[in-house]
Image (cartoon, rainbow, N blue to C red; front, side, top):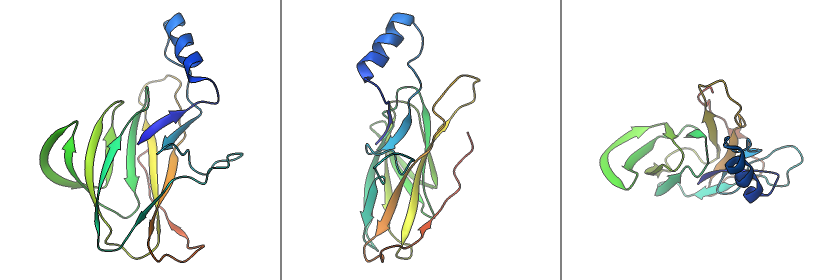
Length: 160
């Protein structure tokens, strides 16, 4: 699940937005399953998705962010989209998912790569000249049997 995190009381953020009629304050980070990913002065090392080679996993991807449309990608892996917003659809493969706030999708992830660690990234899409949280959040897909201290395979994410 994708979300946002503030260094303040979320109710106060919402109340301020409601009272002013303006959008909520910009979040301090995006999250993947509640983790913002490795960041300066943050104790979280990010979320790790553990997989076994040869298995296929159903991932439910949810954009629970308030205002941000988000891209989602796993390095060197294809995702097979099988459902969008509670409607089944003809499966198709893609390497990057785009979700608007509140949108959900189910994808199949086949663990068919070499044993190792692969970057999972969430980054915002923005095409308007307004303030927004432009920080990407990262997590790790880790294959069972990956030795400690293995370098993470990186990916290119879409530009803002």
